[in-house]
Structures are given as structure tokens and as C-alpha cells.
Image 1 (cartoon, rainbow, N blue to C red):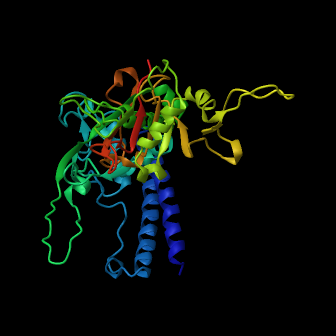
Image 2 (spheres, rainbow, N blue to C red):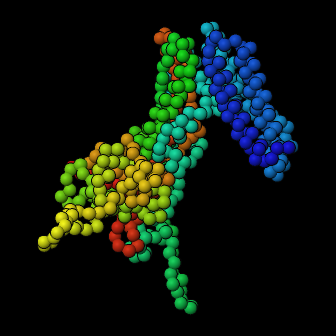
Image 3 (cartoon, helix red, strand yellow):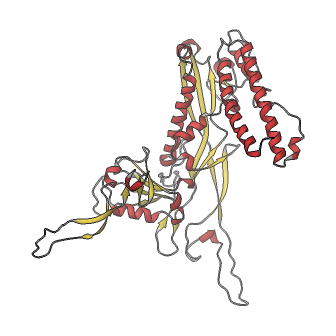
Length: 452
């Protein structure tokens, strides 16, 4: 019998194979020219692979000591899927039949009306591909995004996440602060009375938003370029990645958009109260960046988060960063000298470009630097950000759902592909933290104010 490691690898390889076969099967089902016997053959092929996976899984569970499941009879891994279909072959056949001229529509096919919040006329909507058959696009999102993969991601089954958090805004003693939310310790002598300490908690709610893409494709293009559907999936994934990264930085927190780390509102407006904004220096010229700006930003990032933090910059700042020096003094000639003296400001660079000194990536004060087009223009707030994006919360429900319909734009000879991703987010920290000694406010999210 194969080892546990070999069985796990087999399951991983077979899952990838199953995903590819499923995507091809769904594409066949949506093609009215596909023969029903071809669909059945594809369904049988998928079912055989699923049974093999179930058998290997049983052996793996038995080897790992999970005996209860090993005694159960083998069932097709495709049984009891969402939508009420016993397997993907049955689902594909139903879609194929419904999309044929004069075909019968299976009542288990979910359809969404083109307008209004109801599940009505099939001719006005699209058949919902069960999520098991439309996976893969979320992989494009992860691959294409720079910030989203770093976040704390939570899968939920409802439309919002309610969390209780420790209400800590200061590291000072209880007379002026709330270290650990009020759970404090005290030095005591023999027989001294204990001092009561009570934690302060608060509750917050993070709601799901909905990111969508709607792509009509002509019948001619589908016939002449069959790979267009796969290409659309990849492009939608890239766009979703771009949008979620942008929302994590700039999102307004209103109008069904996640709250970004740069957003500071007033009153009842959405607000990231944990953002530290470093003011420009007195007399600093517009659209400039100096070493003092960088040093103050670095100091405002809470020390515990430096290991996972990055600098995010507008690419226009690269030229400026390459010229910044940490001053070490000035050498001037004094008196008569036989050798011409060097004069001028001296210092050491604080920015290391990619490839310099053997570094693969750019660094600023030893922390990674990443160019990001979501950062502000040179001189605007957020043109340079220092943040630990693992301190950002992402909530998701399932993955990216994909729908297709030939009916919505039937009179235009177009098939419509619709993609939906239910995702929401907000900064994980609810406020800045005042230092135990001194008055500096620190946070995992630091930006530089506008220099105008």
C-alpha cells in the first residue's frame, strides 16, 4: 500500500485533474452542438475518477486512524451536490437540454431574473453553475493580487461576521489608559488586598459586499475562439484582484465597498481610527519626500508588526527614494591646504534598490518595498504607506460564482457570462495605541499626509 504522503499527493493530483475535467464538461453542456452521448461519456469519466478518489481517501483515513469513515460504503464523490443534482453529468445534461431550442428546463436549475429580486422566468435569467463546478477563478484572484493574500481571511456562511474585540487604546496604567483592555496586574505584599481588574470588550460587525463582472460574448467569437471562456475567467480574476487590493487601501467603507486602511471619516462616516498619518515637516515643499518623513513613519509602526510589514509606494517615489540619505555630517575645508577638500552633505542611503548589494528586492530601512498603483500620486496622502496587511480582515462566502445564459441577449446572438464574488473587509485594529512611555500613537497602518 502507498504511504500516507504518497496517498495525499495522489489526491492532490487527482483533484487538479477532476477540476480540469469538470470545467471541460460544463463547457460541453453549454454548447448546443454537443451530443448527449458525449456528455454521458464525460460524466462517466468524472464519476470513475471521483470513486477512485473516494477509495484512496478511505485508505488514507484508515492509515491515519480514522476508522469510522473507513467502514462506510463508497459513494460517488459527486453525489448530493448543490442544486439537487446527483452528479455533474446529470447537471450538464439538464443545462444542455434547457439551452436547446424547444428544450425542457429542469426545475432544479436555479435561474435569476434579469431584473428584480426573484427566481423567476428561465428565459430572462441564467442557469447558476453550482460552486463545485465553477472553482478556479479565486485562484486567479490570489495570484493576481499583491495585498489580498496577506490578509486574515475568514470564510462565513451568512452575510456578515460579528466579532467581540478587546477595547485597548493605550499601553499606559489604568489611570490614563486601557492596557490589555483593563486586565492589569499589580505588585502586592503579604496579606495585601487584591486589586480588581475587569476587561473592556466591544462588538463589531463586518458585512459582505458583492463584486461582480458581466461579460457578453458573441456567438461567432465562441465558435471561432473556444478558449474565450477560459480567458474571460482569467481576466475577471485579474480585475477582481485589482479591485480587492484597491479596496483594502482606498475603500470608502460605504456603498457596498470594503473599508480601506487610508479612509478616515468624521461623525458617522466609515473611518479607520487605527490609521496613523504623519504630518509633513514645517516648510516642506509640495510633492516632496524627505528622510525625516520616512523615519517618523518607521517609528509610528508598532514594533511587534515590523517583521510582517512592507512599504507600499507609488512608483514615482522610486527616484526620490534613491536620492535620500541619512546624514552623517559635513566635511568642510578650513584654512590653507595642499589638497583640495571635499565639501557637502554626507550620509548613507536608506533605500536599497532591487539587485543592489545582493538583495533580490528593494528595501527601505531594512523592510521590503513594493510598488503599488493603488498608492496616491507623488505628494498626495498615501503615496507612501507602511503597513502590516496581515492586520486586515477579509470575509468571504464560498468562492467566485459563475453564471452563463444564452437568453439574456438572445436577439444579439450573445452568450452572457456573469461572475459574482461575495467578499467584505475592514482593518482589524479599531484604534491606534498610545505608547506606555511618551505620547506617540502607534499602529500597524501608517501613511504620510499630503504635501501640497
